Image (cartoon, rainbow, N blue to C red):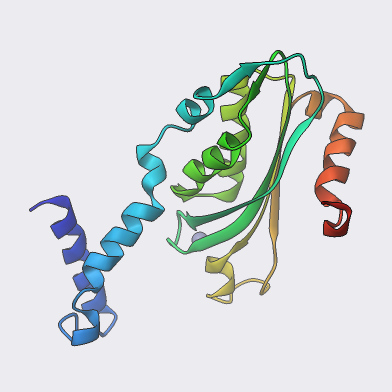
Length: 192
Ligand code: ZN
């Protein structure tokens, strides 16, 4: 049996176990749809984030902070396969090389489209940047809502989990760190 058939069979089993009839009209195409959705939501396993960053590296004398704020992402928690909805803020200080700005959100989304733990994803984003562009430092903050907490009602509803990963000068230099946090916390109205 090919992979898609095996996946669909598993979804049919799940539907039957929760008390549904996998053969009723509304559900007949559901296993195929769930298969397609999951292949999309986990496409990050079949992509290499460092390769994406490596596609657009440029030499530069800039040594000021580069910040990409409010990168929206959708992920799935690895414990319950339920959505994690959030945004990431990613900054680095170049050390001779910069990366095309659009590559940073793409890289974030590669990690998001895998089964995740928020803290691990935060670290992975920071390490991928450190390893590919070798900057003076990297800072990543991820803010996210976890549907496994909210929908199951075990924890505070609508709470946001915040995680950060600091590398290089962001870790060593309090001024750099403060500049980063004040930039990501600046209210929307102060932006253009
Ligand atoms: Zn979970």
